[in-house]
Length: 255
Image (tube, rainbow, N blue to C red):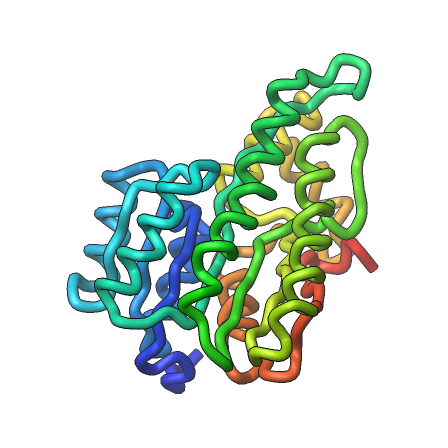
């Protein structure tokens, strides 16, 4: 897709920035003119990602999204570095446990909600004071934030909770012209998803992927770039009248 400078001069913060969706989104944003601040837990991967995007257009900071002080420091660093903040992508996530409810580990449940829900809450909390009209907040939910599946109580609950948080903020921030939406990827061809599939099916990677392909009406996994293009849509003025929406990028799984 040819660049159209849809994000020219804007600044984006992306948590989970070192992952495949985070980096694909960062590349899409940068190609459209945005400055990008990557946050995540792997310093070497964040540094490499920022270097790929270009020293003048990107920066990074190791950030535990469950720690309020660290999230605030990251948001403040992005604003100090680039002078403004326009796009906020809460993309950090963990798999959590896969287990029947009676055996589901309580610590895994708590940790999964902490990363996905508290992480999105803290990022919005500390970013909103810097945002002005036209800004966009995006939470990376999941197809199981619209549907559900057995044995993933932590992950599915967290992804549904992100929708509730999104809808609250969309109503709260609409008078300021700030839009808030969730994006709901189905299975994506990346390491995170392959680990989910292996745990869910007990099969090896290739066989597990084929099992999941049979669940997807389009018959295949998404690429990270396909998710990134939807992120770009929600970040840009192309979606200027969308707020409080759940955008499914799931090959038809939630239909």
